[in-house]
Image (cartoon, rainbow, N blue to C red; front, top):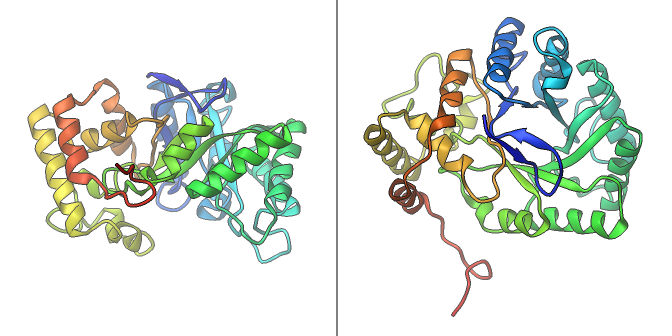
Length: 325
């Protein structure tokens, strides 16, 4: 598998990341072990989780597999904090106390002594940003965290945080931002991606398959074994079951037929090779789905197909994003 530097840093990661959102809920420990082994045997290194996935069970399962299914030094572990875990005073948010409490909890569940990439899961308007960024510095200086990133930040939030860290000379420059990005969701191209490019921050797309819609599985209905049929994921998938998305799915399917590959491969290859993207985060219900994503490693879309997909999925840019004159 090809490797890329994450932002303007020395950290090199596989150009696909393994997402673990479903671990501990729809994916049990045995299946998780199969996924992790399959991923690393294919050359994958970056594994993404969060302290709130399945109420911490995702981290716990990953922790049991580190050192057993795969050696610690073969994986780059990324996790997140900020989202609320408990109702206690330090049970969520981006305050210094909440973040450092969350960090210790993640380390305990993962059974490791440091996290390779620690990400702020969301912006917290209730906490001064300098307090949040100082907590990241403390985490890095303590040796418990190697690199830091953010997730779900808007363009101005990302740029503000990156600038404040640079001006303060902090120990934890932001090297990545994790955002939803796919043929079905290109809103980040307005401000987030330009901000990331300006600051040398790598893009980690989540939902790179349009929450599963771009695979084409929902073209004629909702498969009984799909996330769209799951009570807790149905609204998540429904977000992209629109007329616009249907036109994009048709274009993806046409491209896949012409290339002799799958719609999944076409959609994933498109976002993987977008400017600024380092590693799409792919989640899979089972190892078979993951194998389909890993099979895209050898696929590069022809320029004509890429241009056609760009056209059918394009978004309108208004003032001031659109260049005038």
